[in-house]
Amino acid sequence: MSDTPAKKTGDAPKGATSRKQLGFFGRIMQFFREVVAELKKVVTPTRKQLVNYTMVVLGFILFMMLLVTVLDLVFGKLVGFVFGGAPLWPLW
Image 1 (cartoon, helix red, strand yellow):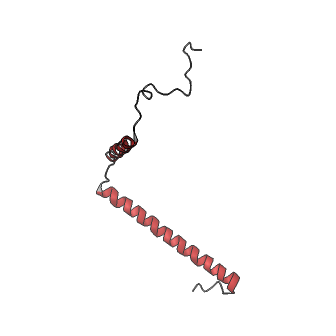
Image 2: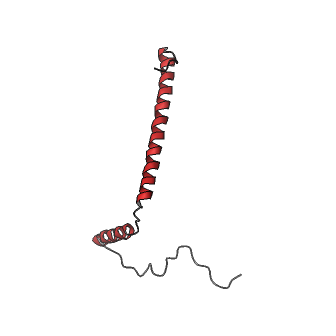
Image 3: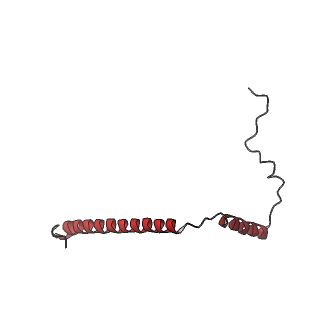
C-alpha cells in the first residue's frame, strides 16, 4: 500500500479554479478562436486522394441506386401479385 492520500474524484484540476468566468461576448469570441484553431488543423487532400475519394463515393451511390431499384422492382411485383393478381413473370 502507498502512503500517499487518495484524490477525491470531484476535485478540479489546479488550473481550472484560477480561470476567470467569461461573459456572453467573451464566450462568443472564445468560440470563434477555437473554430479558427480547429480550421488550421484541416489538411487539404492531394489531387490523387480527391479523385480516389470521389470515385469511392460515386461507386457507393451507383451501388445503392441499383440496390434500391432491384428492391423496388421486387416489392412492387410482390404487391401487384398479392393485391392485384398480376403475374410475377414477365417483369414488365
